[in-house]
Amino acid sequence: MYGFLGIDVGSVSTNIVLLDHEGKVLKKLYLRTQGQPIAALQRGLALFRDEFGDAVEICAVGTTGSGRHLAGVIVGADSVKNEITAHAVAASIEVPGVQTILEIGGQDSKIIILRDGIVTDFAMNTVCAAGTGSFLDQQAARLNLPIQDFGAIALRAKNPVRIAGRCSVFAESDMIHKQQMGHSLPDILAGLCEALVRNYLNNVGKGKEINSPIIFQGGVAANIGIKKAFEKALQQEILIPEHFDVMGAIGAAHLAKEAVAAKGGKTNFRGFSAVLDEYQASSFECKDCPNLCEVIEIGARSNLLARWGDKCGKWSNSVAAQQNAV
Image 1 (spheres, rainbow, N blue to C red):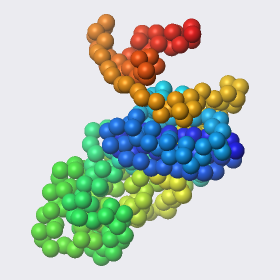
Image 2 (cartoon, helix red, strand yellow):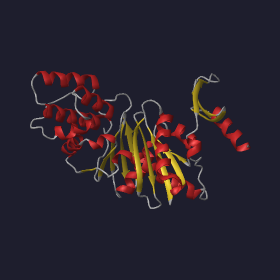
Image 3 (cartoon, rainbow, N blue to C red):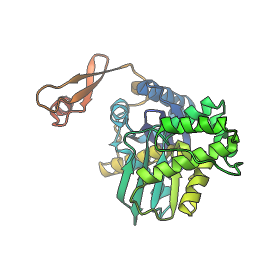
Image 4 (tube, one colour):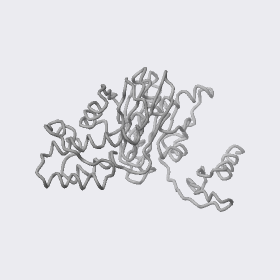
């Protein structure tokens, strides 16, 4: 069987999917990164190796997410793309004709506007984690609630309270105040869902033309309270794709498949044994110009595999030139 790997390495989660040649998801993993992206990636790929072994021939691998360059070096990626491209590709395949993508992950959120299958506009949150999955996790833990029950409880609200959602500190203070006033838990949770959606639309979605079909994806799409709050605010139906939590990885796999086909059909995938090797990551500040770029290095067995982070390409290109000369 032929398979195509997609890897999305983020600050909160590391998502890995394996697609068959028709694009069907054979397996997906959603792992906590826990500040150790290499370990999370290796843990996930070890599970794939143990389950599929030689039964699947990996024909392409693609990476995305904030750790896409690191993951790309480790696995030998055929395609390394940003999250906007990966999410847009996956959404267009899952829901042909989609015009708006609402995406909320662990520590960031984004909106992507498509017209006729082309990304025409996008925006991401940049300065505050209010409204993201990590904030919801914190509030669920503070209330001693399983995060998976958060949305269902919010749907039982009769009179959602008004909560300030522009800042996570203010939102938490407001929730505590509403608890002290005796409001019910469902009303407070529903109020928080509405506050987070209001914050998202006023900041990330500000000035965007939000047309249907609208897809809601990312880990927070599991919260049906947030979905209902979006539908109430936009007065439009919100669609949640089956694999809403790994859409970036699915897009990365599709992009890798295209990249391999374009270059003649041979993947750069280094194999599971190489991927599970021991790696060393380090960085230094380049002082050759006023940019003072932080250059990241990744190596294995005393061999330097890659550098990135330099705006001029001086360091990254030198490694690539050495590898091409071998």
